[in-house]
Amino acid sequence: MDINEITTAILSGKLDNHIISISQTLEFRRKQAASETLQSLRPGDLVRVHNIKPKLLIGCTAKVVQVNRTTVTVDFPASSVPAKYAGRCRIPATCCTLVESNV
Image (cartoon, rainbow, N blue to C red):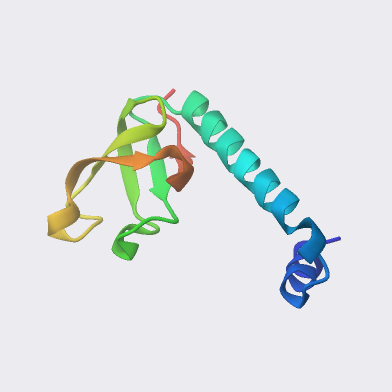
């Protein structure tokens, strides 16, 4: 099955008997992906932000300052985000994608 077939099957109700298992599997994979992201990030790396609120930050790049247990402290440059969001903040690791490694 490709993603379109899976999505169609879920939306049409064909997988209703398996919905809890699917949900648990997705949550497990999300946590595993976050762990992999945390292990790969280092201070100085550039990350792209996704799936976060405020929506204005989606697609913005930030510099990693510190890698925490479940979050990443990043620094948004004033040139890439609205002024009120510029500077340091902590975001969930699940909301980061590595763009450029500092190594």
